[in-house]
Every structure is written in C-alpha cells, then in structure tokens.
Length: 367
Image (cartoon, rainbow, N blue to C red; front, side, top):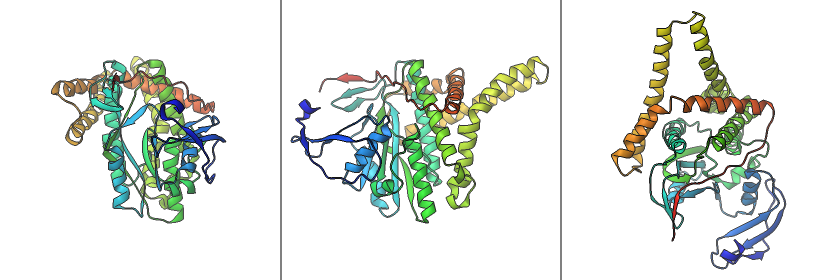
C-alpha cells in the first residue's frame, strides 16, 4: 500500500473515544487526499480495527465494509439518502449484500452479473436474496431492524461513540452494535430510526467449500447466541417497543430454539414412525408442507428481487434460481441446521475464534 499509493507518515490528533489496540502509525496519500491508512497492533477482531477507524474519522457518518466486498458506484449515495431525509432521527442504514461469485469485475466494479458455477455458492446466492429482500425489508418497515450486515452499513458516528463503538466480547459485532443502538436510544427516551434500503448493493464473496461455509455459519450462530443472551433483558419489555415485544421473541424462536427444534424434529420423526407412534401419511404431509413453505418464500423473494433490482440478464438464470429454491430444501437446509447446532455447542464452550475465511470470488478483468 505504501508503494502503490505513495503513502507518507503523518501526525493526526484524535480522541480515543472507543477502545482499540494501540496505533503504530497513520499514513496519508499525496495522490488521493481523502485516503487515510492506519497501521495498528492486531486487536484480534474486526471490531477492534473498526473502532480505530471510528476514532480517527472526522465525518458525521462512517461506513463499514468487509475486506472481501465491493460497493457499486451509487451505493454510498443511495445509503446516505435516508440520513438526508431524516437527519435528526436516522442513526443507521444497511444495504443489500449480494454474492459476487460468478460475476465479472473490472477496475473494482462489477461489469457483468452472473450466477456462480460452484453449486454451494449458487445456493447461497438464493439464500442472500431471501434474507435481504424478505426478512430485513420486513423488519425495517416494522421498525425492528435488529441487524445491519457487517459487510455494508452506514452509521452516525456520534451515537455509535455513545454506545462505546463495536464490542470486543462477541464474534457478532455487527448484530451487537445495532442492538446496543436500539437499547441506548430507548433508554434515553430519544426518537430514532434505522432503515434497510434494497437499492445500494455490496458484492461479497461466498464460501465455495463446505469447510469454509461451516466455519462461517458456526460463527454466525455463535454470534447470534452471544448477542441474544447479552441483551436478553430487552425481551418482552415495552420500553424497547416493537423490538422488545416482537423482535426479541422472534430471535428466541429462530436463533436460540430454532436449531435445536429443527434438528430434533429431523431426528425424532423417523424414530417415532418406526416405533408406530406417528402415521406415515402425516409425516409425508407435514414434511411436504414444510418444504413447500420454504419454496414459496424463496420464489416470492426471487420475484421481489426481479421487480426491485433487475440484476439478472436472462430468463434462464431466473429459471435456474427457481430450481435452486426447490433443491436447497433437500440437503442444504438440513446441513445448515446441523452447522447451527455445532455453533450452539461452540457457544457453550465459549469459543471466540473467527476461523480462516479463504475466498476465490469473481472473474477479474484487467483495467
């Protein structure tokens, strides 16, 4: 970086408002005047590095982007719009995260949107569409957005400093920050707003091997459990509004009890059938309904994606994703349930390691 951007050491005054490992040196570039590079001691987490950026930032807003992600040209402008529309109350905005695998990248921008050739990444492509264009859009509209992806989020710096920045005690630091912001604003009795906007897109690389996927999903589950139990005092408390009364009970069912219940169901149904305690026709009907509901939600997400963003070039890709929406229920979903169960076990063992996230990603073209 020093050679490429001709970085020069500079002295920059800053307040250590949030906690992070010591900074060794700060650099600026004579070529790009707005580029500031921080060389700091390894704090052991992304949260620590992000906190250093928060301290040295001088803007009222800051954006967090993962190292394996890239923003579309208009993403920052689109994401800042809610702050301009409601500057007094808007404190955080998240955009859409899409799978980069299969796309063509030139000069740091996606020039062609394609589907991943890797089957595992292809299933995650569908999964990301469903997670963002259905779940987060709904939570945002109902005023109980509980997570803004660490891959792409914009926050009001002063409010984040008030809650102490990103926490070091969880691997789900993005989830934790959003919950801390909700909690702080409600306890302070201040009106506020958070929003998910589908138009700004951040492209990120999805795991293409079962090993890397397992590390990622187990970490996600650990983070969800850490944050839930850390802030469990918010559940069913009217003070925390719809998040406390609806959002946290939902997280209890989905994040805490969901993996245990789903895996137990897969295990018990064949055992009870063989023991004569469950009727075979009932099991078949129940399982069919279970899978059809999953397919229905995925297809609705795909339709909404095409209506809202129109990223795919041809109907063949839409047909392929429709097929994936069906097939992911036979194997992939069960595998994910197992990984979440392993994440539960790691949470009980108080494991804190992130794990190595190797990436392969998009096809790169020379500038």
